[in-house]
Image (tube, rainbow, N blue to C red):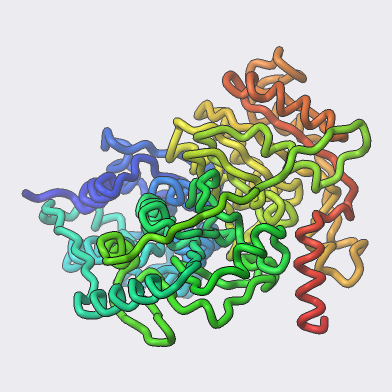
Amino acid sequence: MKIKVADYLAKRIMEFGIDTVFGLPGDYNFNILDAIIKNPGLTWINSTNELNASYAADGYARIKGFGAVVTTFGVGELSAINGIAGAYSENVPVLKITGVPKTCFIKANTPLHHNFSNPDYYAFERAFSNVTETTAFLTEENAKDEIDRAFETIVRTRKPVYLALPVDICSHLIEDKIPDIKIKSDERALKLAVEKIAELINKAKNPLIITDYLMKRFRLQNEVNKFINKFNIRITSMIMGKGLIDEDDPHFIGINYGILADTDFQKAYAETDLVIGFGTLFADLNTLAFSFIPDERFRINIQGNFTEIDDVRYENIYADDVIKALLNADIIPKTHVENIQKGYEEIETTDNPIKTDEIFPIVQKYLKENDTITVETGIISYPASKMNLKKNSNYISQTMWGSIGWATPASFGAFMADKTKRLILLTGEGSHQLTIQEIANFFKFDVKPIILLLNNKGYTIERVLSNNPDDPFNDITSWDYKKALELFSNRTGRYGANSKDFAYFEAKTSNELNKALLEAQTLQKEKLVYIEIFTEKNDVPILVKQSFDSFKMRCNV
């Protein structure tokens, strides 16, 4: 049966479990949007700008598995490229679709708007080739094959792909049959690797798994949890992998902060005689400025499409096949696992000016099962990662790419991916100002998060890194965020329970934050809750200060 290219693309998007597509309209993508909005399985969301659309698609994909964003040619796609680059950096599988001018204009190199005065219709595809796993510029001859290749690539790599779809090609008819996607590991390499891993685990007395973000991207949370429980093996997580493991599980010894970790973690790690990496990335921010560096005990490194064991690399074996095979391997379960203290101990609140380090023990107290917690980059990302999550919680942050402003639209996308979970957003005012207009969609789509905004008078993470913390470029303009809520909701909100659309709180002491969060437990069921927390501008969390002090000392900077 024949189907229009745009309809086939919409069909394949829905087949991947995507039910919400983000983006902005433009005169070169109307045919694509028509195919999306007429598909009963898809919801189209007009984002407030293309960058926010790409961030929202990123947040959506982290929860749902895959995401999609549509923009117009040139001006629209370049506005989205930073969001796609972040997805590429962190293996977030987002399909980037661009509507481009008609083929006849491309062939004639006609000067059209959204292009250069000396036209180059492939310049933007070349730009995206640096931040996606593959690109495709669709024609009558290749449309079906290239769409299918792009979807096969996004499954295999869990990285973004880019499709340029000319206006006229949208209506071109192609076969509607969807091919099977078969991603198979090299059977011989898989067998050898699994046998060697099982052998090393069986010889070890106290093995430890370090898990990380790739296990999320390949949707292996359940398999990892089955593995540690079946074989009674302890596990820790890097910051980017937080939320992958049930943090109340006795096998979980906490987030891996290396030399900055608590005493119980240090003791457990010291007893380890074999370290197994499940999708790990030992980058600066993921290791608290290299506070953790793998040593000679790190002998097994399972990545997305290869595994290394004692410096021998086994190519073309996929993480899901490796872990599933290990679940059926002849591995002898270990005999003892000791449950250790994780997260923050409860603190006593006061009427003194609140410190940043006091925020997170208080927030932790109000976390529930089935929460989605989105955390912005900056000084809050380290202390937030120490909070102990409840069961079935999602935790997302952009640790590697670290683009400020990501978290607000990403949290919106995350909620659209799973509306059954309560949404909590932690952000700083410097980041929030970049993308705050997406709050309008929170109100439009009846999203009721608890938003915790840290107001510390500027870019505090940059103050930590700057030679002079008081450099004027780290100051930002002061906003009345309550008025911003009134603007985006198009209604006047009032403090507390009388507002129809939102409740706004100021918290300048730990007592005020505790009270606001207590009220938020009820208010959030009916409205958006916004808590602005005021701290001193140079108040830096101890985990941040320790990590950068340690880094400077090691690097002599």
